[in-house]
Image (cartoon, rainbow, N blue to C red; front, side, top):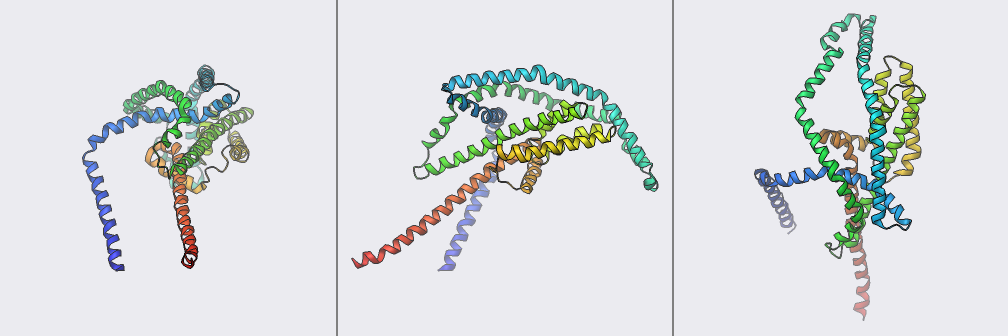
Length: 380
C-alpha cells in the first residue's frame, strides 16, 4: 500500500512538472502574444520606479503636514511646491557647478594621463622589472591620452542610437512621473483597503500584515538610503574642501550617489578622487582615504543604525553576492535594485514560512484538544 502511495505521488509530481514544462515551451512559441504586455510594463517601469522612490521619500512629509491639521490635498500641494523649488535650486545652482567642475576636469584629463604614463614608465625602469622588458608591453598597450579618447569617441558614435533612446525615455519619465507621484500620494492609503475586497476572509488579516511589512521594509530602505546619500555627499564635499582637493563638489556628489550601492559604494565613490590626485599629490590622495573612512564611520555607526536600523537583516556576504548576480543580470539597474528586491522576496518567503508553521501549530493544538476531550465524552 505504501509503495502504491509513493508511486502515485511520484506520478502526480511527474505530471505536474511535465505540464509546467509544456506551458513554458508553448509560451516560447507564442511570444508574439506577450510582446505587447512586455512593452506595456517596460514603458511604465521607469516612471513608476521614479514615482515610487519619490513617494517613499515625500510621504512622511505629507503625513507630518497632515498632523498639523492640513487636509491631505493641501499637504500634497505644499510638498509638490517644495519639490519644485528643490528641482529649480538643483538646476540653477548645483547643475552649473557640477558642469563647471566636470568641464575643468575634462580639460585637465590630458595632464592626468600624462602623469599616469610617466609613472608607469618610471615603474618599468626599476631594476626589479629590467629583465621583464615592460616598456615594450606598455608601448603595445598604447595608454596614451589620444588613443583613449579615440576609443571613447568610437564607442560613443556606435552607441548613438541607444543615447537617443535614453533621452526619449528620460523625457517620458520627466512628464509622466509627477502625475503618477501625485496619485500615489493622494490615493496611496486606499491601496490596502482596495486589495482587501478581493481577499479571502480567512487570510485577509495575514495578507494585510504582509503588505504592511513590505511597505515598512521599502519605506525604511528608500528613505534611509536617501538620507544616507545626502549625509555622505555633504560631508565628503566638506572634507575634500578642507584638505584642498580640486573638484571637491563633483567628487562629493559622486560619493553620495555611489553610496546607494551597499558596501562597494564607498570604494567606487573614492576612486575618482584618488585617481586624479594620487599621481600628482600622493599625500592628498591618502587624505582623501582618511576623509572617506571618517565619513563612513559616522554613517555606519550613527546614521545607518538610527535611520535604516535592522530592518533588512541581510548578511554582508549575501549583499555582495546579490550585487554580483544582479549586476550581471541587469547591469547598473540591477546593482541599485538588487538589494531591495531581495529584501522584498525575503520578507514574503519568511512570512509564508511563518504562516505554514503557525498552521501546523494550530493543527497540533486542535489535535491535542480533540484527544483530551474524547475520554470525557465517552464517560458521559
